[in-house]
Length: 109
Image (tube, rainbow, N blue to C red):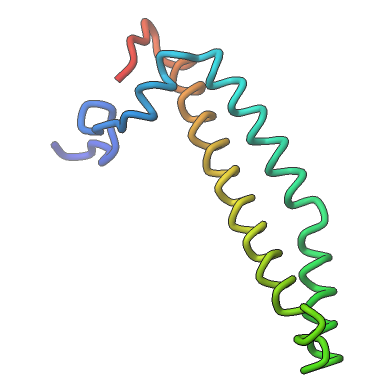
């Protein structure tokens, strides 16, 4: 079909999590709020801490590694990935709720 959007609702197969959330809008809204708060708390000072840790490693070299600077950098990077996971959950919930609000007579996927 010429001009059809490749992700139109008639051709997309939704996963089990998406279908579960689309039928429980109140749970989706609650999960969206919790993931937003967790993302915000994790990223609040993360960039500053990573920058200070890298500066500590560069300035002190092997002594910084012995003092646990590399382990701390690894834990900060893990927190960054955890924050990204919370952001993905937030975006999934946002998509579910926006589709529920914008489509007439929404029956779910």
